[in-house]
Length: 208
Image (cartoon, rainbow, N blue to C red):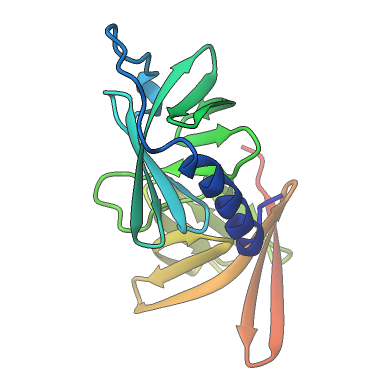
């Protein structure tokens, strides 16, 4: 289940308090820090509210509310250690493609070059989905989408996701439209809002 933005902000504040204890500095290591090359890069949370840039020299920057906080880190056997004047803290982490999971913290998404949206695309939304009218909605990993209606009409365009919302731009109408979405099992629910009214549309993932 996706974390909502309120919970995200709470977890960020907790982790920031933790990090501040250790960011002031750390002793030099003659052999240099051990750094997993897969973690090097910039990662953001789902809402794009905070992120990390992990560098190959064992330094990192926490990005939060337009501010940056520097620190040092190392990795070993699936664990990341942050070290500073106040001591050190170690957490488990795992990387699956462009997804970084750090123990007791949000899922982070790798920022891709040239993408102004920190998260860009939620990998869970990718694929083809069918609604009760047999219309097929497809989201592709290159940021394009298409829908084939039951009468054969086709529409397409581009999309991005952030914080439980998908922003869709159609080639026939360049005005972006943002709708809420949730994924529960093999169901995709897109919720449109018109005034105070909600209009949810449910799609089922198509088996390839």
